[in-house]
Amino acid sequence: MTGAVSKVTMTESDDEFDVVIIGAGAAGIAAAKYLVAARLSVKLVEARDRLGGRAHTVPTGFGFAVDLGCEWLHSADINPWTGIARKLGFAIDDTPPDWGRRVAWFEGDAAQRKWQAAMEAFYARLERATESDDDRPASSALEPGGKWNALLGAISNWANGAELDKVSTVDYGRYEPTYVNWRVIEGYGALIARYGDGLPVAFGTRVERIDHSGARIRVVTDRGTLTARAAIVTLPTTILAEDRVKFAPALPDKVAAAAGLPLGVVNKLFLRLDDVGARELARESDRHLVGALDRVETGSYQIQPHGWPVVAGFFGGALSAALERDGLAAMTAFAADELASLFGTSIKQHLSPIAASTWGLDGFARGSYSMALPGHAGDRAKLSAPVDNRLFFAGEACSVAHFGTAHGAYMSGEVAAAAVVKALKPEAAEQPAPAAAASHDAQPIPADT
Ligand SMILES: Cc1cc2nc3c(=O)[nH]c(=O)nc-3n(C[C@H](O)[C@H](O)[C@H](O)COP(=O)(O)OP(=O)(O)OC[C@H]3O[C@@H](n4cnc5c(N)ncnc54)[C@H](O)[C@@H]3O)c2cc1C
Image 1 (tube, rainbow, N blue to C red):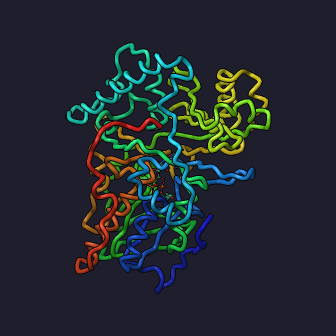
Image 2 (cartoon, helix red, strand yellow):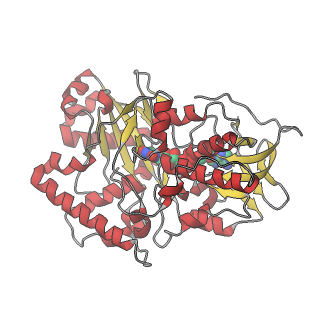
Image 3 (cartoon, helix red, strand yellow):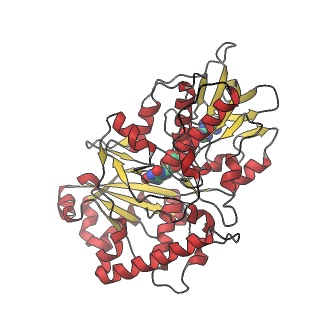
C-alpha cells in the first residue's frame, strides 16, 4: 500500500475544506490531483485502509504481483493512465491480447472467420440500437438460434458482469474502445495507488450521510463530520442504490439513476502452476482461452500472463456471483474442471490457488463495474449531473463512453473537478483541459474483454 495513513481528527481547525471527495479510487484520486493543482483545500474520505478502490494489486509471494481489479489499460492510446505510468516509471507490456482468436484454438480458422462475422453483425446491431429510443435488452440483438450466441453471452458476462438480457442495448453500444489494450507489469492498481501517493486522505473512514441542506456541505462519517464548500461523490452505484450513504435532503433521482446502473459481478482467480504445469502450458503462454464455446456460464483463462507460472481465470455474471458465494474451493474446482477439459485431467494436480477476488461480497464495492439495465442508458447523464452546483458526481458509472474502466473513472473525476474549480474559483486562471471532456461522446461497439 502506498500513502501515509492519516486518520481524520475532528477538531475545529482541520475539518473544514474547500472540497471533500468521497472515495479514493481512480476517480477520486484524479479529482483530488486536479483540485490540489488548482490550490483548493481538499480531503479525500476513504472507507478502506488503502488507495485505489476497485484497482487493487496484491503480491503473490512468487516474485510478481497480480491485479484483483483493473488490469488492462483499455484504449491505451487515449488512456490518461498510460502517460502517468510512463511518467512514474512503470513498465508497460504492449503485447496485444489475443481475445479475438478464441474460436480458432478450438475449431480452426474457418470457424474463426464465421465467428468474427457473427460477432461483427451482433455489434453492428447494437450500434444501430444506439440511434433508437427503444432501449431493449442486448439479448434482442442476438440472431435467433445463432451458433455463437453462447459465446456472445459469455463475453457479456466478462465485459458487463451480467447476462445479455439484463443489459441495455443502447448503453452497451455506446461504449467507445480504441481496441488498443496494454498492461502495466507492476500492476494497474499499484500505478493508481502510486499516483495518489501523498494526497490528503482520511483512510478507514466510512461516509454515512451527505447533508447538503445548509450553507456548507456536511459529510458525516463514522469518525466525525467534515464540512466543505463543495463535494465530489465517487461511490460505486451499488453503494448509492442500496442507500448505504444517505443524502439530506434526499436525492431520489440520484438513487434511482444509480439503481439503473448496477455493478455486474466479475471475479478473478489466480492459479499457480508448478514447474511441470508451467512447462506443459508453455506453448500457450499469454493466450486467452475460453472454457467452452457452447455455454454462457464459462470462464476466460489467461495462460501464463507475462510468462508468469500462473493461470488467471475470469468469471462474470450469475456464475461469478455463485462462485464467490460458494467460496475459493468451489471457484478453484470450477476452473480446474474447465482447464482439465482443455488440457487433460492431469493439469489439475499442477494447479493451486494463490489469489482470488470477491467483488460482489465486498462491502465498499458490491460489484465489479457498472452496466445499464434495459431502458436505463440515460441514467449515466442523470447520475453525473451536479446538484446546486456544489455537489458533484464522478466514478466510472458517470462515463458515457468509457464506463466500467479505470480511465473512464479518471476522466469523470477530472470533469467533476474542473466543474468544482469553475464553481468555487470562477476567477481562476485557465486550468489544463480535462483529458476526458472530449471523450464523453457516445460511440458504439463494446470491448471484448
Ligand atoms: C475484476 C475486475 C476487473 C477489471 N478490469 C478492468 C480492466 O482491465 N481495465 C479497466 O480499465 N477497468 C477494469 N475494471 C474496472 C475498474 O477497476 C473500475 O472501473 C475503476 O477502478 C472504478 O474506479 P472508481 O473510482 O469509479 O470507483 P472505486 O474504485 O470503487 O472507488 C470508490 C471508492 O469509494 C470507497 N467507498 C465505498 N463506500 C464508501 C463509504 N461509505 N465511505 C467512504 N468511502 C467509500 C471505496 O472503498 C472505493 O475506494 C475492473 C474491475 C474489476 C472489479
